[in-house]
Amino acid sequence: MDAQMDRNRESSPLAPFFEATTLKTNPFGNNASAERLYRRSERVVAALHLLTNHIAPEEPARLLVRGHSLRIMQRALALRDGLRAEGSRDLDAFRAAIRYSISLVRMLAVSGLVSSQNAQIIIEALDELGNFANVSKRSPLSEGVAFSKEDLLDVASHGSVKDIKDIRRIKDNDTVKDIHAATDTSPIQKDTSVRKQGILDVLRSGRELGIRDIAASLPEYSEKMIQRELLSLILDGKVKKLGFKRWSKYSIVSA
Image 1 (cartoon, rainbow, N blue to C red):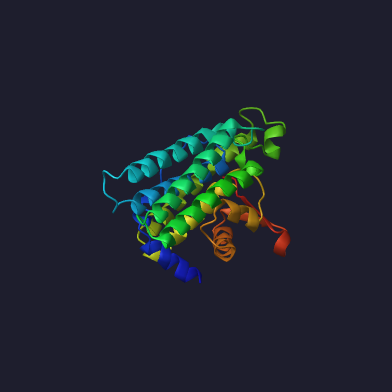
Image 2 (cartoon, rainbow, N blue to C red; image 1 turned 60 degrees about the horizontal axis):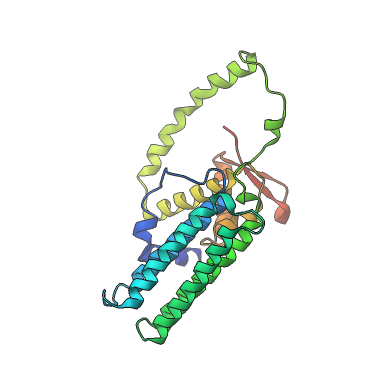
């Protein structure tokens, strides 16, 4: 099933635009939930533009759907600071924009401008986007600040023996050669790399998370697929595991 999902993603018309590059620009800071919400919004809006490609450019419904869908991304971007705020107007505006877009897509289907099957898929994706915003509001990943125990402990004075040892360990960076070796990979290995990077991005919140917590931020992957990638990351020394079976928690290994 996982292999079939990989093939479906490879054949997706959106894949060339969203899987090819990794962006360095990040306006979300440590707010992993807001970043994930924006990425999902971007995909849904792109799908709406593809859905309306065949409609005549002068058709008012096409212009209305496309123009309003762009507001969804604007509203999602505004949530980078207001996702957890109680009674957030930004969150209310985001959900309202989604609800209006759902109505517009329904009108496209009723008018015969798009197929009912494609319209229903887009409507479900929009509805899930709004639900994801509600879930993210309660997630610990939706905060812009992440504390660790080390942040609250006394820090050794500058120039201590411990500091010197930590600096000298930079020599371990010789393992960069593994990164070069990974660049020459098959499409399946590239997909694996994308999944691993997504998992690492979620774990960089600094918290210990279970598989379900990670899967909530990576809904495009199954829990089984995430579990397989976590095992690989543990063997690579990038992720550590605490607990057993369903009580297992995962966190990123500090450099």
